[in-house]
Length: 124
Image (tube, rainbow, N blue to C red; front, side, top):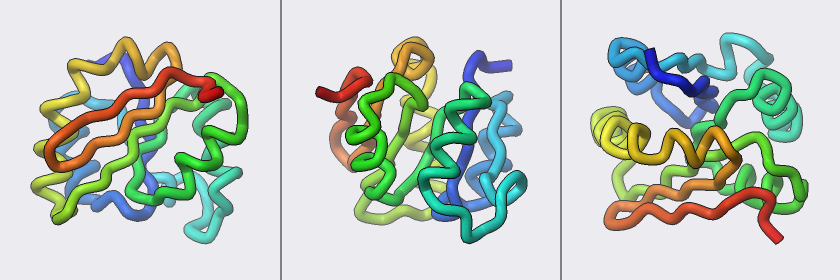
């Protein structure tokens, strides 16, 4: 079992969530816990209170995490030209083991096609 807890927002495919679970990740879709129309701030508070990392393709989360001035929750934002479930899964499985410690200590991670950017939280 991996040492991080992940919350996938609505933009992350159930197929990706299932694939990560099969690989031993503790990941749930936010819609399993909160109503589908929950505000992003509620999702961030849930992640903070459960020591979870938000996985999203929604750029609003990056702004909210930056403006919060807090070191948690960590955030993984996927900005891929093609966000198919298979590609998203492949990227996450390749990158998560390398950044697990950074996520535990509070980081905003952006995954693009050709690079990964990591910013320590809080963002000042």
